[in-house]
Length: 463
Image (tube, rainbow, N blue to C red; front, top):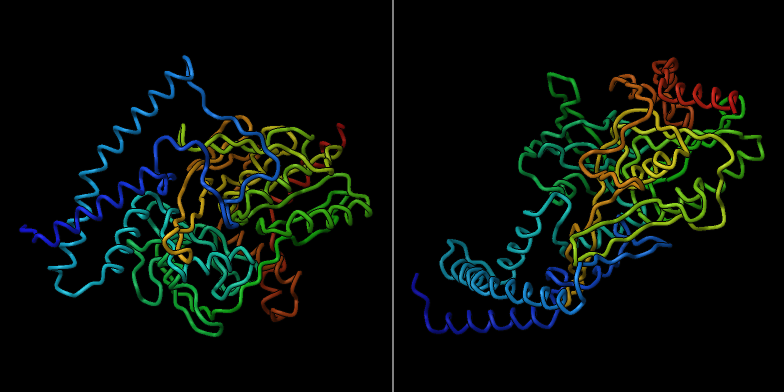
């Protein structure tokens, strides 16, 4: 392709500007020798631990030789970037000059950034102003939509878990349901960012989903009306029987630890001497909150989670149990299933590794990566959401892609679990359902909860 003199000068200027940015550290988060983690500015799974110890990577040999090695590696990496930056610039100019439909430099550049981030993993993305604002709404716990958490599993858009008391929950969507179409549009190749845009919408608007449930041979169509989604994070506090308490955490939001403490204090006054902590269908939330919850049941100073990123780029960070409340004098069971992900897996893994609780249920989802949100200096209304690390349990087990394996496996079919969810919802919000709906699921049996209670009763006898 012939490049005009003006365009060649533009290539040179753009390349020089990009290289200057690299050398000055503006793009330090992608450099090979970054000394510390990039700053985390929002909630989600990007929050840093409340109380932690930091351990940097070390190399054998003297400090001087290590520094020289790192500097040489960085220089070589910068040198290899030169032709790639020129290639990117030429492609940008070619699109601008020859593409059939005229595109602005902004459109081309933003498209390139989206492509770069989405090629990394399903959780890294470029946030334009609208997406950046929506993400901040999520951490506040209120938005309009159908109330489901989604992810990509085997490259298929999948329900991680429905949020209780939402349109998606009442429509019977379950963890593991595959979403094949949204309003008639196939989801094949659809990224999470675009899927969220299709699922959300004004309160009262209608949405059609084509669903393939686990074990089903035929799809079904689900019609749902969008509504405001307000997510209560702690529910169901009660004494089940014989002093065995029960508390359910639906997500790890900012007030969750305080709400949990209120429920624990209330159950304690009722004579609680054992606890079932239900994390089923809990899609995760704030790392900080997960640590605040886990530390309530561990001894002070015990390890909760380790966050590890790329060597020499992201320091290893250890989340350590702190705080003033450490309830270690009663037996516990934690319930998990396919919809337990991220922060809930951190809590379950910590309590399991320290032998503080028996884990009961089914294999968890296995989503435990750390995303950091980095606002762009050129436009602070835009940001890069970038996977920078993975979570590991106290014994060093990687959670991402594997999940937490229960100590006691108790299987439930999708129909059994759906019946349990609806029966529970009927009891907690009776005014939202008809008498016929309540009768239909009145005899639902929660075999996972029953098994957990039996285990705790046996432990108390031998204790």
